[in-house]
Image (tube, rainbow, N blue to C red; front, top):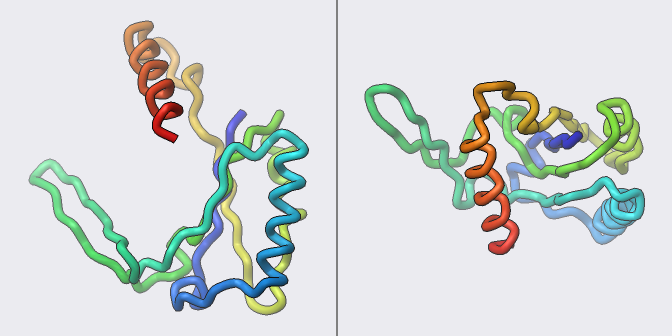
Length: 142
């Protein structure tokens, strides 16, 4: 099972406040634990929404682009981990071990990633084949 753990933004992340050396070291140690446990697939921090950020909104009538920065910091994602765990409970237990901030909040939202089996019969063999090709190409691009 795959899960995405989204680190929610706050005034500091949106204000461009960079982590201290100690905070980077603590997060690096946590990420190493995730790697050693074999569950970390990817993880990155994101620039604030004032830096090269946009929301692309598609409707039946057309497409619009809203440039950052965005006002609601608690609705933004400041970083993420992509985890592979045996269960939701295992992923949650790992996230409970993430380094705590010295002040303020560090909010992580955990969500399960859809897998091919979740789509049932609508995900035909042809669509599965297409998905496999896309994943293989994406891995080459990485």
